[in-house]
Length: 47
Image: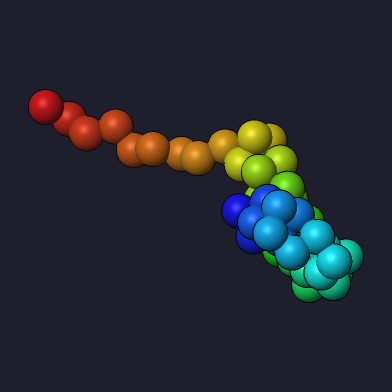
């Protein structure tokens, strides 16, 4: 959302914002891949 806002409203600062936001974007991709590979284990409840 920050990247989109910066690209539209403040295109001159796009590179600076990208340098700041990149670690968070990288972490998000790693988390997504980990969840896809490892999965989330949900305990089944007995009814």
